[in-house]
Length: 413
Ligand code: DWN
Ligand code: ZN
Image (cartoon, rainbow, N blue to C red; front, side):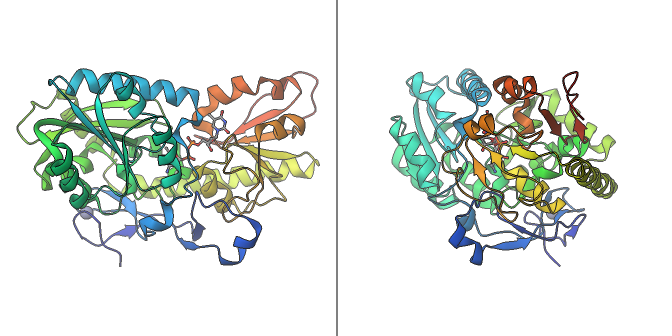
């Protein structure tokens, strides 16, 4: 039986997707023969409340020099991160020569805001290709994983940090104790560790089963984060919801006793207790609901194909790997997926092997229906691709439920 990565108690899976590929492992034809699969099955630790994957993929298999995801592909996310940097500056960077460290800085989308304000910064990321983009912009970066060891080295070389920040990163690291121990070693006594990740309560509420994939090792709640923090002499001192990636929480952590926790912390923990976010029943229900959702999506696709209509996807997201493979779709159901990322274009999606094409291809080969796999960027994409609906195309979304958007009058259903 697998063990909880936080407290080592036995872990029971509440759902199994079976064998799944790596969600960001886009392939060329010759790579198909040795594609890597693992058992994707999330579980809740009844002892400490942490939701996590029961089988983990080694970090180096997921985060390397050909990492597929560039954070700066969305204009909405660029605005979100500019505001995030502003907030960190206001709350944590009041000293004479502040220093901020970002764990998993990707292409520098968050560090940009510190650099523009002349703040001393360091970004750490294991993925050389995305990090090269950050370096190209003149940001100060270092390649590697953030661990207790590397944090101590950073403290020795640059001094301690006023703020340590991370976005969509902490939930990716199986050795969470090394990350938190590293934060404790690198943070100034009155510093803040501020990070945001998808909120497990939002995943449950929205039936967002496609948030579950190899890179998302943990599915945090305030309750579970506070428990990990306590092990390392840290505590959650504030929490703020963020309307990105389907609903995230931003956690503010300090050294225990250094900051008075806001009322929001207790309120969130109480809400989680009352709503069952840390209880097994909520996850059993989620498994049943999302099983039914999967069937509705399969039926919707079958119905469309039976009328000889064409379906393509939009956004070759990591999330799409879970939903596509869980539904058993392939190129026979989804002709291609449009995506703006040059490194994904021309490749095949993990597991299902659906070809990825540039958005220009989508505009030249509109399908009848487009499955919006980047549902978290819906507003931005539907505005950008207004021509699709104008030409009679129909969007399909599946979070929180399958929704076939109404077609313009006169178009065939
Ligand atoms: O946690 C993670 C999140 C933050 O990013 C990582 N583990 C991996 C990745 O997950 P994802 O791929 O599900 O993230 P997104 O942000 O939903 O991906 C959007 C995809 O859609 C990208 O490949 C870019 C593409 N896109 C596009 O083609 N046109 C996005 C926008 C906004 C567009 O207009
Ligand atoms: Zn546990």
